[in-house]
Image (cartoon, rainbow, N blue to C red; front, side, top):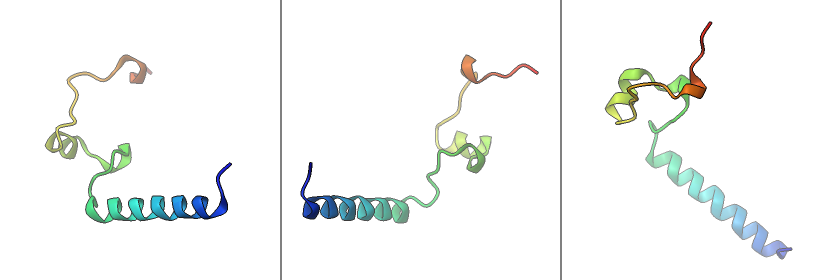
Length: 58
């Protein structure tokens, strides 16, 4: 178990890192709803074929 001061320090550090990352990478989202195929291809994240577990045959 960590002392309280160390827990607080760790939480503050994590929050600062998250804020810094959000400020520097505004458009860097991997969420499916935020990325169109064109945006994914510009970022180099295109796929020739979708993985089999993600294919849906309806």
